[in-house]
View 1 (cartoon, helix red, strand yellow):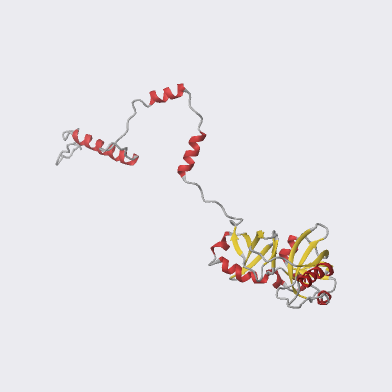
View 2: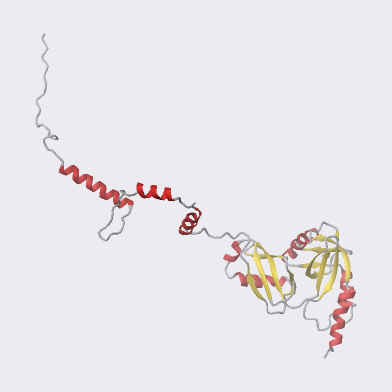
Length: 285
């Protein structure tokens, strides 16, 4: 059984002894676009030798080694794992999203430091597109792809692949710290509304109420004028006293006009003579 002071010594050794400066390049320049679907970097073989020489490193190690990577010029920080130790000496290769987040240029120097992170308990994510939320069981898809992300930091962008399509998802919030370990932990996942989400249009009734509120108040003279103008204006009603629709009123009006025309019908005025005699014009030869 390891004593507490030995565990503390191991963490201090890693933090103090492994601090290196490398020139950063995107993974595509090393022919390893596959790591773009993770947040793992590629380090040179000398980094593995240095880590192996650290006291207690590798003994009973269940979790992968994690690193803090920082843009020295802008003091921008994120965290990552390591994919392999095959990079050229003095260089490291980063996934595209990580390279963009740190605002790096090809060959720019970065500081790489070994870190230990607390296991995460909560993470809030925001998809870039609403299409991701319509996938069948998006949480299961996310859980499957998170195996390639050993840790996450607030502000990171995850690349999730499903059905030959890549979805971008931002890390909005992490607990208990801004950077957490995602392996071997009970992690609760929540989703924020997607970036391209648009609220559905409001009901017409709500718009009418809003327009009525925006109408200016009438003066007393305007009110009296409206009362005078509308005094003798009526409308059609049903037997129960309710108003009828406009198209129903038009039907009633047309029916009344037809009935009036039938009552005022005079057959003498509309008579047609039967067998009218032909008109001949005599011409002298």
